Amino acid sequence: MELDLRNGRLSLDVPALMGVVNVTPDSFSDGGEHFGTDRAVARGIEMVGLGARIVDVGGESTRPGAPPITVDEELRRVIPVIEQLAAQQVIVSIDTRRADVADRAVQSGASIINDVSGLRDPAMRSVAARHGVAVVIMHMPIDDPATMQQHAVYDDVVASVSGFLAEQMALAREDGVAQVIIDPGIGFGKTTSHNLEILRRLDEIVDLGAPVMVGASRKRFIGERTGSPATSARMPGTLAAHLWAISRGARIIRAHDVAAHTQALGIWQDIAAFDAHTTIPSGTSASHEAVVALGTNLGDRLGYLRFALDELAPVRLVSDVYETGAVGGPDGQAPFLNMVAVVDTDLSPETFLRRLHDIEHRAGRQRTIHWGPRTLDLDLLFHDDVRIDTDELTVPHPRIAERPFVTAPLADVAPRRVPHDSARPGPDIVRLGPIDTL
Ligand code: HH2
Image (cartoon, rainbow, N blue to C red; front, side):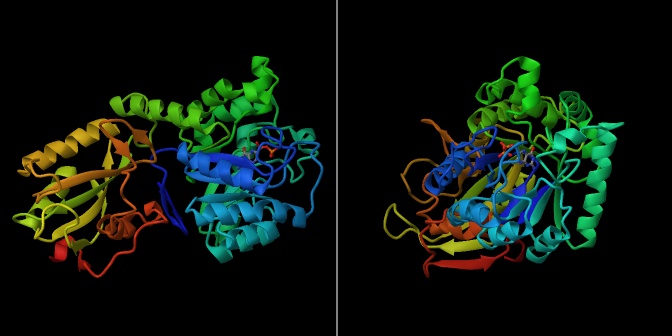
């Protein structure tokens, strides 16, 4: 499962974290913390560093009782933040109920529209269709946060929510919206019992077929069940709700506490990967996405590349092959062949790295001359979006931006991962074409 976004593909094979940046003075969860453009941008960038793959930017609080704001005020809050985050290759979603705000936000670089009113407004559907962006359709019983709690009355809350989401999905598709994410709207016009029931039966919403997003972060039902009124004290309950949701098939988690979620999801993932027969629900996979750079300048260079790709299988994507002048090392080295592969693996970054070394070894590489000629060099560029900096391993690979022989093939298979400050490829980098044609 993946989203095809304007700034690259976002795989949902591994559940994705969406970090929340409310550019508001009054949100129930983090009101005032990120108010002001600079603070909001800095928090968004920080969240990406901590493992968020999407940053959700909102300018209007949906808390019951929050004072309404004008479209101009909402634009003034969110647009500069979106522009600056998008300029740094961050995948941004705009959390708004207003088509005009969504339109401007997408023009400023947002690639997902998160509409808590569930795309009820036809103008919102037409903005999404016109720009070809993904949308989050969220359930709330009426499009009015001020009175939604008075409408928390259902015969069967899961049936009502699923029915609404199915209808809105159908309308969205009729109107040409390309990609839809669905969200049951935890806490929106729902009592504590409703929220618990929705989470318990989340698989019924997953069965609708679209990627499911869940946002239970710091919400009131957690405070109510745990007797911890302060929103900032609700993280443990939030993690429990979100891990439950993932094990029921949720693919996107909207959260304020990104570092804690990255750790929790990582461990969930590790456990799931160890025994694929027990904890992984159907329709999900334990796979990680590893991005590997390949290089060779000695002997049967194409043969070594083919050997490596066979060993790395299953390989999801391969770049073209590039011939590149040697950088560093002794003078007069032969040119390299370089490529980049995106690989599915259940292994942790450390174990995967050992596997790369083993493949290099079996390709006859002698680690004698530093930066000297080599039959096969395999570098781990990325492992999902984790960040590791130990003596043995640094991911993302620290020298990607300064190596055009890496960024040129990387752009073929994972353009969103190319650092924005990368050196430009020069004339000594020649695209030879797909490996099957060489
Ligand atoms: N929850 C909130 C806001 N937007 N969007 C989706 N798709 N799903 C959610 O569960 C969701 C959402 C409420 O949380 P927060 O943004 O922290 O508060 P506020 O609306 O007061 O700004």
